[in-house]
Image 1 (cartoon, rainbow, N blue to C red):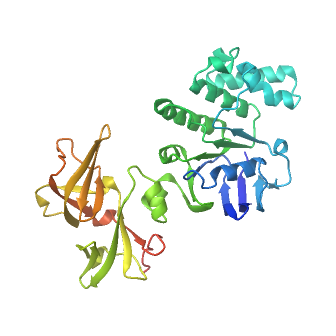
Image 2: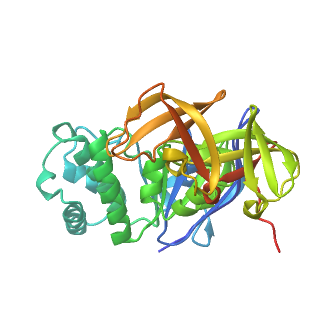
Image 3: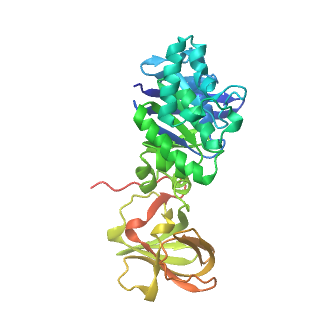
Length: 369
């Protein structure tokens, strides 16, 4: 198995930086996901690695070899595209065999390799069919088979599930993850779908405007987002934010948000800050619906009015208006009826609150003792 390392990769188009000092390491056998919105530079990064785009500066290493000057065919990477890129006039067998034929692999070896991959992907019965006779999920398996049969050092996957329906996407997420762990090939997978990223990745690298914002396990980027962008992008529904000003600091810290006063005990305040303005964040699942005012509740309490509700299957989403801000809540008991216009009391547990610098959006750091 082989690692993938990118150092200071920059790609400019005119005055625009599609990638800006992009650095990333994917360990041997690891499943790394590049996650970010459309236009953030994910595809540019993958195309540079594959050799389809020449970077403006920076270095790409596959194993210990720098591959910047190597043509795509000599980099020993396999790419799976969003549109599958199957040859419509070829059978499934010949689509999978194509990269081996291009490398002049002996015919008997081609037959063995194709059938072994078809067995791995459970598509043996499809080998004589043409792509037009396949479902979306079957075409995706064929595309994976064509990449796998080469036994590449690195897999590059560019939004491979985006053309599938929701149910099939969920199924194929599991199948691709199982397959990657079985074959052990170092994989860089790009997507804009944070659920896809969180469910598949060993490590996630979150991108914005050509820059990596945070790298970590799915749990790390969810529990300790590096900034408000990551906090907002990871998690569904996205995190609630309140812009606050620190107006008093005695035995309790008082925050003011749009004339709503929020009290935080000094003992629960564990962050350093450099100004009087901060952003308070809390995930919808961590907001507590307080019935009978819940006297023993340890957290910020505030009154509001329900302005919107939405059924999410096993859970419900409720939007509560507090002043001019709206707070999304999903931690709702099954017997609670969230009628629009109803006044409610909600709470933010102190242990679940995130704090960010208002000027930069960066997560405020814990004090060192």
